Image (cartoon, rainbow, N blue to C red; front, side):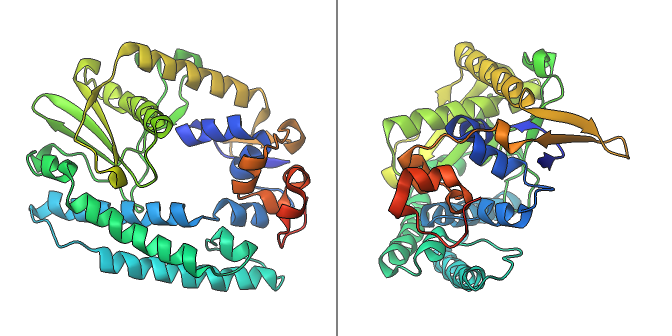
Length: 333
């Protein structure tokens, strides 16, 4: 039985519960389990596209933070970003070897292809190119041109890996009285006021598709709760999903009440579903603790999802559905 200190909502949390309840339990309720360290190790595992996205987001955040501070746009930091990519590869290989030698993984993040089969020059060169191309695209983008026309004093703090993740508490004010007090995470990449409007911007480093675009718009609609919590009228909120590799035009979308009502419904339904699957208790200090019995979170094996799942090495259902494709170093639980 695993535990967690809080129950919250985010787009990724909702998506994972829908995709596979067992992976959700591994990800959010690892504490106190016999294999706690293994679950946490796999939770932190990454793929090359995720690492590329992390690095590009990090360097854009640093660039914009400095620009907000002093009004100077520094040179493209892609060489430093590639160095960070190479350092992550080196650290990952060392960690993968440690695990394969039967040692406790401890802290750190491994890349799944290192863990599964070892280095891949083709994958890693593609990752370096994606980092370089992504930062080139940002520096040449109409998004950056737009930002340079705005008043830096009207920007909210630029979020980076060292920042606290922005959130709001569910309340009647936000139309969420059914889950009053639930923490709702709104990790926008950049938010700012400009000419009477309030913009939420999200950089996307993956491939553009109609479905990924709509998913990002939905994600940003959820983030608009942050504006409503600050007494900003919905009519003035704009969202911009910006896919760097597709070199799109700068298009800001109005958030309409129907879209926001759909998000509210999803938050309420997700919260109700999760709370029906966990047990809430208080520890000796009077703080809440949430207990999850993994057997209540039944796995939902689907070959495509299992193949991409970080928890495949310890999930028997995933190994069963993939068969010989699932030859990984950790025993199935």
